Each structure stands twice: as structure tokens, then as C-alpha cells.
Image (cartoon, rainbow, N blue to C red; front, side, top):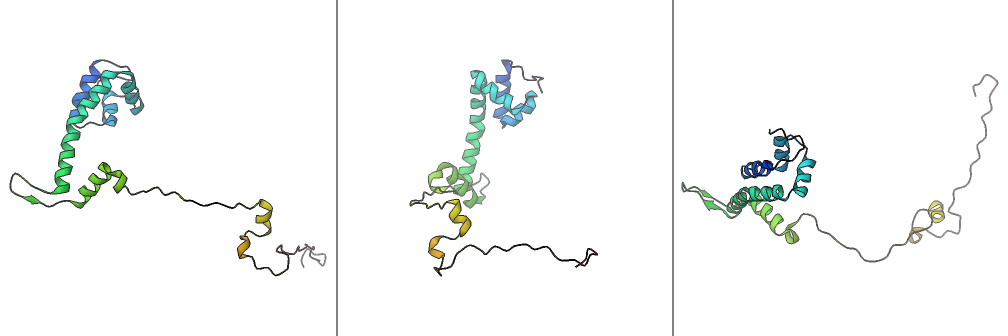
Length: 158
């Protein structure tokens, strides 16, 4: 850790680029510099050299991983002559990221039509839609039941 404690120093850009080339994430950088992830985000916005260093440092490992993923997805033969068939999981991952319009898990659907909303009074009387209520000519409200106190024999028991 370099002892940054939130104070920016120009050498951080060089250190961050070197760390990113080794595969460091923003979370790793925050731990190295002794700051929170929010501070790393602030440095990226405030210091163009820092942002450029992160982008440059992350480019090589990202490209290498991309190439490896592509090889796994399509299958390959290693330098030792070992044949590796295409990997379905790698194919799916690749397609979901490269072609999300056709391969994402979630698809958005739009619905047409109209929506009828009853008033609260209609819902209290009978919450069922009108087409499900049988017309019997009787009221749909429940009869009122009055509460009458229980008679006791004076001992407090019924």
C-alpha cells in the first residue's frame, strides 16, 4: 500500500497502470492505495491521467482474456497437441455479451390494450369484475349482524 489515504499524487497513475496490467480491478486499486472505491471513481473523474492509465493498463489483460474466451468458445488445439472442443458455456457468455439484442436472458415486452379501474365503492360492494357477477336481483352486500351481549348468571360465566 502506498499510504495515499485519499490524497492524489501523480505517481498513482503509473502505479495504477502497472497494477491493471497485472489484472487489478478498481476494488484492488482501492485496497492498494488505502482508499474506498468511491475515491477511485473520484480520481478517475478529476484526473485525466489516472483514467487514461487505468484504461491503458486494463486493455492488455482484457484483450488476452477475450482471446482465451474466444478460443474456448470455438474450440482449439493446444501447443502440446491436445484438442479442446468448443465450450457451450463460453459460447453463451460470449454471445450474451457481444450480441445482447439476440442473446440476453431478459426480454422486454410491451402490452397493448386498455385497463378498466373500478371506483373504491364498486370494489367494496363486490370486488369481482361485473362480468363474473350473476344477476340474481338480490343485493351483493352482506346482511348486517348486530352484536348482542351474552347474558350471565351474575358469576361472570355464561
